[in-house]
Image (cartoon, rainbow, N blue to C red):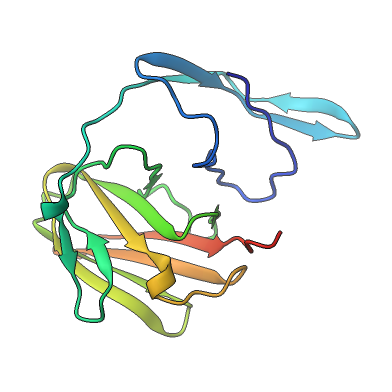
Length: 179
């Protein structure tokens, strides 16, 4: 499989969920090249990973919110979804672009926390807030964005607050579906 893209203006890029799916136990590699005046002027090292599919989650991991918002709370990775990793290395000025109608993210609970609160704001107003129990290690979450009524191309912030006061952030925007 060969995938190439250009014109990336954001510091974070996620492979499209509608792209060619990864194959189980297949190793993939990538590098980043910077072009200037139609020639490559800088190249990153080559990074690689081996894709291993995880088992899906049962329906019992989905809970109904008061306003009718379904939020994935099983903390397990759901098969077929791509997730953004939220870590302390996410710079508060970094922004990601989302093409889908849901925000899939995961965290590595190295803080030994038992609960976390995650919220989405537009910089002034909190638009969504959820408290969830979390496990040690990786925890996966899905927020259906259509229930929050976000505006395409506008910037939003996902804030994660752990019960030990550690905080993580992910800035994002919804791509305009008409583009």
